[in-house]
Structures are given as structure tokens and as C-alpha cells.
Image 1 (cartoon, rainbow, N blue to C red):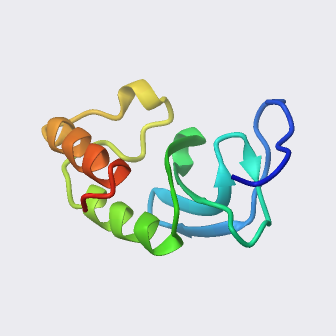
Image 2 (spheres, rainbow, N blue to C red):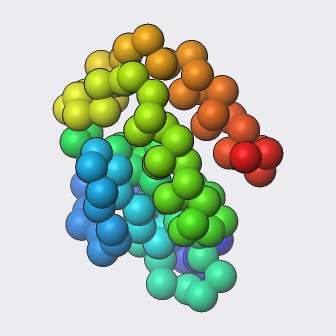
Length: 102
């Protein structure tokens, strides 16, 4: 991970890329990181929530593309309201990416 990460202090602004409902930034749910060997996080921008943290930016992009194809309310402002007919498949896809199987 990225050395010392500050304790959680609420929402913080991070630099990254945004496409549709998703954002990708270097770091984890605890904040941004600029170490060359750091990880990347895929976030749901509308509810300011990190979906998962992966080792490479291109894996986050691939996951975002796969998730966006599923029928879910990606623009919900509360993470508990991100729901729809594709929720079960989204869990399977996320599990596979987190295990490095995708």
C-alpha cells in the first residue's frame, strides 16, 4: 500500500478520472496516494463510495465497463439504493475482480 495513510477525516477530494457514474483514483478508501507502487480505487461518484481497490488502473477501468453494462441505479446518492435486476451479477463480477479472476 502507500506508506502512511492519514486516519479517516471524512470526505476528501482526490485527483483522478471520471466517466459516467464511476471515478478512478490512485489510492484506497482511506485517501489518495502518490507512491509508484500504490493501488487504484474504483469509486461510485454519486455517493462518494469506493467500490473496490485494485492493483492497476486498467483493472479498475475494465471493472467499471463491466459493471456499467449491468442494470443498476448507478446514479443513486445513497450506496444502499444502488439496486436493480443486475445486483446479483454485480456481486459475482466484483468478487471475481477482487480475486484476480477477471
